[in-house]
Amino acid sequence: MPLQGNIRDFSTTQLLNLVNLSRRTGMLTIYEGLPTGEKDAMKNDKMAPGKERARVAFNKGKLTYAAMLERDNSLVTVLNKAGKLTDEQARVLRERASNITDKALAMRLIGAKYVTQQDILDVMRRHTEDIIYELMTWTEGPFRFDDNEQPSSDVIPVLIELENVIIEGGRRITEQRELDKFIDDLDASLEFADNPKERFKGIHLSVNEWKVVSYVNPKNTIRQIMKVLNMSEVEIKRILYSLNQAGLVEIVKPQAVRPGVKAPTPAASVAQRKPQARPQKPPEKKVVLSLIEKLKSM
Image 1 (cartoon, one colour):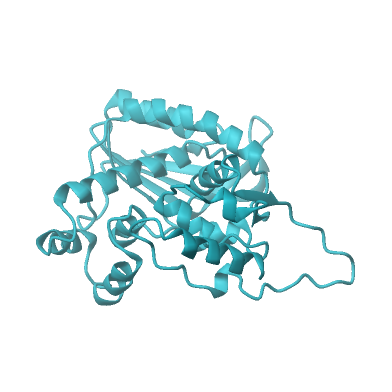
Image 2: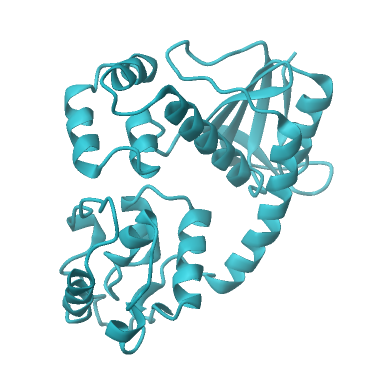
């Protein structure tokens, strides 16, 4: 009989500890909660399982697979996000290899020397762990654990000990609480700090930080940027915290729309723009400053 419940009452961290200690093999599925209109013994609203939100697989107590169903978990996207494929390479692969499984695509990329086998294992491990860290922050949702169920043989499995994941997840939960205090509204937008030319001199940013910088514009909300860059809430908040602490970017709270006044339609909203090609190394200062001036004038 499958183990069922709600992570409101039995948290993801407790589930991971249970799987780890009992060395269980199976699949954990977390669902969107649909109110039933009834109350449980603790006077909380009962929730029925809706659509799947996440799936996590285990083999003898070890983590082997994780996916967020509303997010792109494909190998191409994971490699692109990790900087192992450029935006152009990722675009071409999505067009030409759309019918190829991740496992088959990995073999082709290794054979063509785009990446190494270790690259594949490293990025998939990091991707899997990041999903678990995010799931550990969830506080609501029906779940079901089915013993011995495993993902398709087409996915690329990993093998991760749970002890360190649980410890690191606890540390990240504490970090997220601080990030949530810093950004408490994803519908806020961004703008460059005063004197951006001076502030960007000598600054070395990561690939993902440059990507976020390219969308800094009061017309673009954090939620829009997060969606178009396929980032989790924790990832974008962490990046924005770093950019803010460096004095480069400021958070702009959303303004209430006056009655009878239509909210402006962004002329260059994230949804209408394509991400710029990822630089393989930080762009020249002149290019960066030109980009900043252009975005500030929009």
